[in-house]
Amino acid sequence: MDAREIDKCIDAFGTDIYRFCLKLCADKADAEDLYQQTFLKALETEWTLDWEKNPKALFFSFAHNLWKSGKRKQARRNTIAPCGNLDDKTEFTLHSEESVEEDYLQKELITEVRQIIQTLPEKFQVPLILFYLSECSIAEIASIIKKPPGTVKSRLFKGRSLIKKRLEDAGYER
Image (cartoon, rainbow, N blue to C red; front, side, top):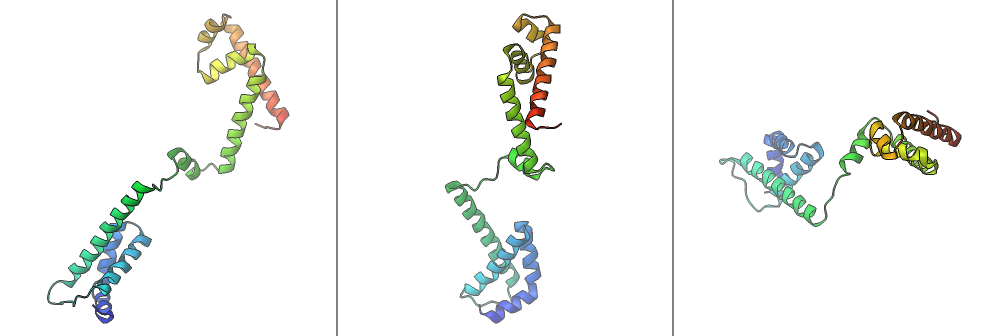
């Protein structure tokens, strides 16, 4: 086909081919690329266009075959070297209302709290770890450390108070 025939085809049914490409790709930029590739492929062929037959179908088949070929090529590339997205948790974090800075500060705070817990006396450290990290109930903690439930509650309260005081001293605010 020559450039005049292609130009005539674009005028005659270019919008239909573009809509078809848009439906196949579901992305405007990819659809525009496919649209251009379709008419480029037609220009590269040695065929003469027969207007008596359905030339529109020829362009639809060009577009469809190019799209399928592109999908296969992408699948083949993904098996060789996958272009994976971020993991779901990171992707959610990046798209949420929370900023990256706030996420970093939250992780920093968790690290600081864990370090503070490590420096607490054992009588406060054990109940805090069991209650918050192991999610044991107060009754379970009381039976583990062989102290009454009231003692466990007071040690949890005192441990939280010590953590809060050390965080405030370190410059963390509520």
